[in-house]
Image (cartoon, rainbow, N blue to C red; front, top):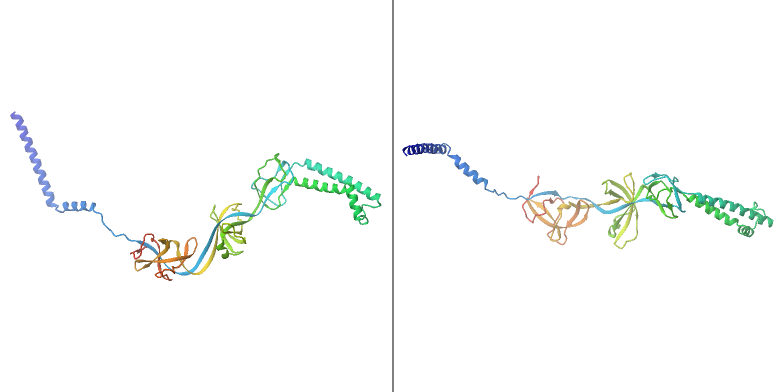
Length: 376
């Protein structure tokens, strides 16, 4: 028992020593560094503190100028080849030879395809024989009346015609012409230079007379067909320059108006055509965008971003000494990027003159007499 009490007393003394030493060290630290505790407290307060800074409305501005305005008439159109023919055989038969394929470029007079000609050749041979037989009969009838076929001027017209019909000579002549035409029609020739398209038949297939066999397209020059509303027609004229933009490549082409149809269609539009040259990248039926620019002099021109709607009325903001002032406007013309504007004549407070500084960006949430800052 005495031994346990002695051990407990020794431990208590040691614990007391360590505690006293710890307290002394803590006291010395705060005496030597009195600002540490305060700094820690301030830092903790700063972490939780949200600083408030007033929001600045930054805007972009532009000085208003009186200048020419490029009015644009925009339309979607389609390319149509100036020369385009659907080729057909005038006679029927089995396809014997096909000399071209889709996409080939051919010259005028070039052979494209041919049908089996045996039947038509036979018919031609028979017609030639029938003509010779008819000619003999014709001569005999004229000789019997005292005339010679080689001396046509001595034969009266009524006797010549009567003998030609009765001998079968006249009919044989017509049959021979038909036979030659049918034999020649068994071969298909190119009527002009162009590209071959739309072939759907193969060799040995049966083709009926008048069946569409292929399409030949001369794509060196295209016509673009597009529609404008009737109120825009008086702004254009034949031979005026148009800009054609291909949707597939965004490449621009220059064309000229070739015709304006003098007829307003049911939907209030008018068909217009313009010609343009092909650089090899345009193809039949391609969809394009057409733009016609007209210069209107002496206009107040602003970017489209400057005009906004407030209560279904067009408004823009002027910048004066760091504040905004709105004014009602009317847009008179537009193109893809700009408006030409005038002050709204129905609003007495609407004023706008050359030299005004107008806000062109950052204006969507602005109000009248708002403090703003110009963007750098």
